[in-house]
Amino acid sequence: MALERLDFDQLTFSGGGIRCFWHGGFLCEMEKEFRIEPERVSGVSGGALSGAAWIGGREETLREVMRDAFEENERNLARDKSNFTPHQEMYRAVVEETLDAEAMEAIANGPAFEVALSCPPQSVPPRISAVLYGFAYQAEQAIRSTPHLEWPRALGLEQLRVDARRAAREGHLVDLICAAATIPPVFDVPEWEGDRVLDGGMTDKAPLPSEGEGRTMVLLTRRYRHLPQHPDRAYFQPSCEVAADKIDFTDADKIDKTWEQGQADARGWLELD
Figure 1 (tube, rainbow, N blue to C red):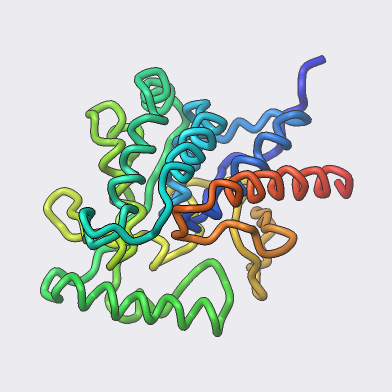
Figure 2: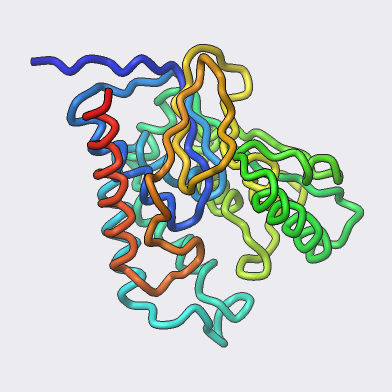
């Protein structure tokens, strides 16, 4: 029997680093009961990789590749790597291995897919901008506890939307996904089309598609005290704090635990629906 289509026109993948494996578990469980076929998809930070893996049909592959990488890495510090951490090289290697030619083709020909980046004033030195906006981001997360941020933008941080389908067609999707998940000083401050960019989650933890309309399914990776109340949006958040740490690249078991929590939370939602 054909599965019923879940009534969402748009799908947003929030940021959260390794916590984004909750997305994969949640969607894999949901898709046992429903077809999820959005017309538009958006992703930010680690959610950009979640979105690409989902569109490309590589969620399980991403889980396996990341697990293997973590099992081979014993420490979050490495003297011979960028910024004395292994994160930048490991993340790029995982993205390159996960998104093969078939996945890239599926993304290039799939639903509209936007990735959000943050653009600091180009006159401010990159390390200073990372510290300034990182502080504003952390403070707002703690005080306002909402996925849609205001304070970093009030201080001059702007958001840039990039067409991920075009990036896939032009061979730049790996660069885009890596640029989207930039957390100085663990990662270098990259450039996109000549401008320095930061993690897009500093302007919005769950940016909706910019030109879309209709009902939106928003997948989060942490719990918020103040979720927006909107008739055309459904926010799905973990039932409790997930096992994975945002940038701990050493514990492969936490990937599985976070994925399994996503599955359990999806089953809980299906039972309530």
